[in-house]
Image 1 (cartoon, rainbow, N blue to C red):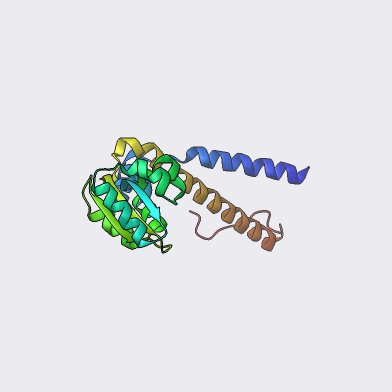
Image 2 (cartoon, rainbow, N blue to C red):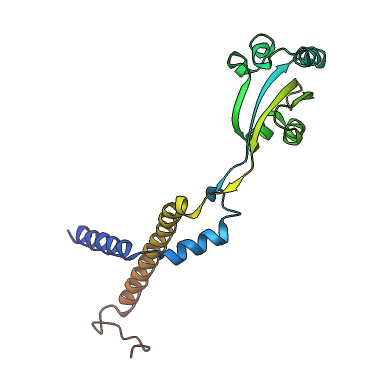
Length: 198
């Protein structure tokens, strides 16, 4: 029963400590200002939208490009000529994070797409798997910082979570030290006197 009692006291302590944690609006605003450029949670990532056709060889890709240049529709061609997984969807890739484009197609494809303007046809370019791509650029959005009002609650709960964790860790440390002190005194003097107490 003694252990259960101690556990109950400890959890009551912890609950109280967690209730006492309150991160001020100033702290939240300060975190936002200091981290909005570096914390990915405070930014909407850059996006690229495009349609593409993947082929095995450069010749096939060039043939695709020639047909597009003559006015054929890339999304229609993709359904029959592309070997990519999204061929059935007409090779459409809407709002891909820049990082995803780089990882999936490789740096060379990413660079070419990034430099292109909306509506431009790009390729043939070798992707990172050694296959060939023809892209149509369909718009991009630069990364932008999310406005404070949309993220303040999220920041507040993150900071409160950290502070609660710290408060609990400090409490446990203090209880451990108290227990050590008590153990050292072995109850001879009833309670320990600290020299710095006023």
